[in-house]
Length: 216
Image 1 (spheres, rainbow, N blue to C red):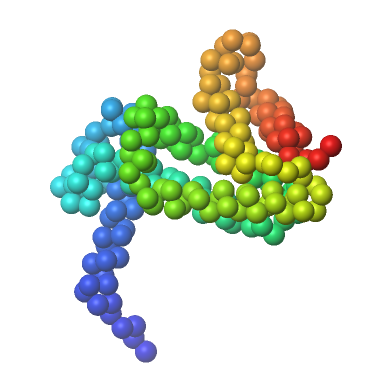
Image 2: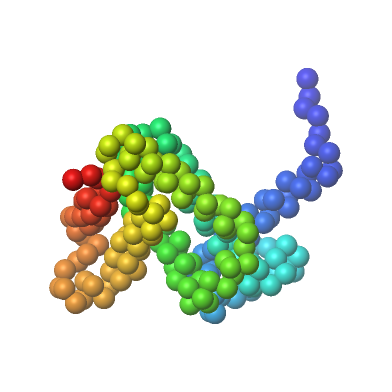
């Protein structure tokens, strides 16, 4: 039996979604390479293979496009975290796995770190106006708080741990190391991106985080 043809409206919606996704991927690479100040919508159009007018049709300005890229970047990392099913793990295993995942994700997605660098240079002004970004990130902190409370009830974790502060510590230890790898390597005369150094860093991070949350 022949397939029913999609309605014109449905087809247009699919085409629009596809075009926006292509634009966002091209813009992500452009912003990651040149930062917000150096990025050019003309180059985004070239990367995407689309007309620049179409970009402005979906995203009315470079700032709006940058915010959309940031929101998509946060949505991607949070979606990947959800696939870990941390709530189903024993508390200590969940904290270790989140630490490992954060490190591995940053290594695999250096563009995420450069996008954050650009937004920090802008004092977070784009994300400050994004309710979507806040809604995207809140579930992680809620899940982490539930894991910490479960660990406390089971006598595994100490009490009084702030879930947001803990996550900032996990992310911060990975972020600082990778963001400053060139200067740190030069200062200490070591290749901090060598496989052995990367494994040592992850082991150190896990030990520090678990040493903080576990009861003595």
